Length: 360
Image (cartoon, rainbow, N blue to C red; front, side, top):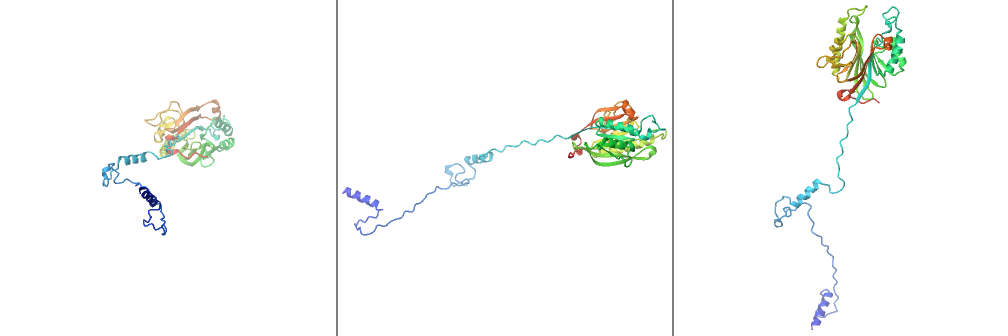
C-alpha cells in the first residue's frame, strides 16, 4: 500500500499535479507555459537616504538630514583628490625679461668754423675748414662716436662730414635753419622720432635755432632727448655778451625743466662759453649731472674740478664713464677746443617712460 501511494505522488509531480483520481485517462493533459521572471535587486539611491544618513539602524524614517560618517568621508575624498588620471600640477610663473639697457658713446665737438681760419681771420695759421673737417670726421669714426653735438659746423664742413661718412650718420638741422649747431647720430644705432628747435639768444641777443631731438636707441628701444647749444662769447667783434649769455642760460634752464617732465633721459652738449656757473644754473631745473663728474644738481651743485666751457651733461640717473677731454696735438690741429666725450649707460628701469619696442 505504501508503495502505491509513493508511486501516485511521483506521478502527480511529474504530471504537474493534474492527475485525476477518478482514473479517466481519456482527457488531454493541459500544457502550461512558464514565463520566466527576472528578479532585479532594489536600486541603491544616488543621494543619501533619510533612513541611512545618521548611521543608526534604529533611525529608519527619521527626518534628520545630517550626513553620516561614510557620506562625509566620501564627500571629502571627492573634493580633495581626483578619481583617476594624472594630477594637474601648477606651472611655474613665466620669467620676466630684465629691463633693457642702452649703451653708447657721445661727444661735444666745436670744429672751429671755416670762416675763422681764412686769411685775415682770428686763426689764419690753421688749415682750411674742409681739410680740418676731413680729419675731424675720421676722429669721429675712429672713436666710435654714436651721438655728436657739433658747434661752428659750417656748410662746407657739413658736406665733408656727410660725404666721408657715406650715409652712416644723419644730422639736424643740417643744411636747414641754423645748421652750425647740429646733432649727428649713427643711423645703425638710432631712429629719429622727433626733431625740433628752440630759439636761444646769440650775439647781440639775436636768436639762433638750436636742435632738440627725440631719438630711439634701436637695440634697446629706449628713447632719449638730445640737445646742443652754443652760447655767445665775448669777442673783439662782439664784446660784453654777458647779458645774452645769462639770457641763453635762463632759456636753457627753463627748457630742461620742461623736458624733464617727459620722463625721458635728457642729454646736453655744447660750447657754453661759461664754466661751472652755467652748469649750476641748469642742473637743478633739469635734474642733471655732468659727465665730468660730481653730484650734479641734487643737494646743491657739485662738479669735478677743472676749467671747461664745453660740456656734456645728462639726467641724474644716467651713468657716465670713460670721460675724456681730448686736448692732444691731433685735436689742436683740427680746432681750438678740446673734444669732450663720454660713454653712457641707461638702465631702462630708471626711465620707464622711455621704454618702447626696439626697432627692427
